[in-house]
Length: 112
Length: 117
View 1 (cartoon, one colour):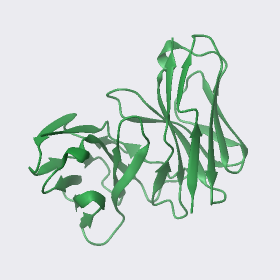
View 2 (cartoon, one colour):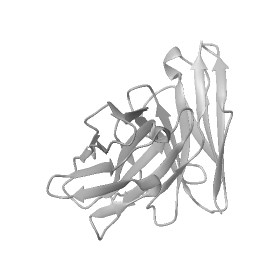
View 3 (cartoon, one colour):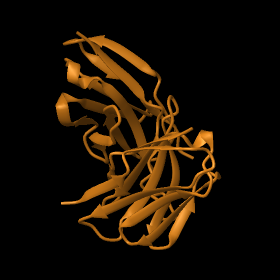
View 4 (cartoon, helix red, strand yellow):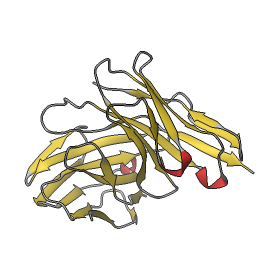
């Protein structure tokens, strides 16, 4: 069966520090992968998606970036965090047929 | 671009009472529709989805939703809620013909359901 792992679960980082969040998927190949951010009262905002290795599409301009170094690995990064980067970050993948998205458990990022 | 409106940001309801969470979407073309549930500090779990066929869709935990194309709505209902249903609920839409391979979901802002004992 397919599973998705996301870590860390919580993270407290100072302003200006770098960020690396990792997401891996098991039990499937060549999935579509997504990074969402959830801020209070604002729902889920799509940040990046990837349809294959090295292919990244950005939905919202910001100081975050994403990379897909391997088929089932998706990384969200920042060189210098801002206070406004605080939020709940969710990784997701789409099943074959693209009729359902599966989500990781999320990372609570607090920038202080 | 697709948009999803969840009309109520918070819905309090007494235990064992019925509940309806409202969702409207913008597209006039065929869409795929979803309801997800999120418990505190967790990811999203699929409750149910509409792809085609019968407009009444049954999901997990006793929830169901009805697709209404003329009103572009996909409201979620449960006849009798439990304390354990306290969570945030998200409606989402996917255009089955979306290009560029993204197949992304567009989410509403969520509705927080609070079940009162």
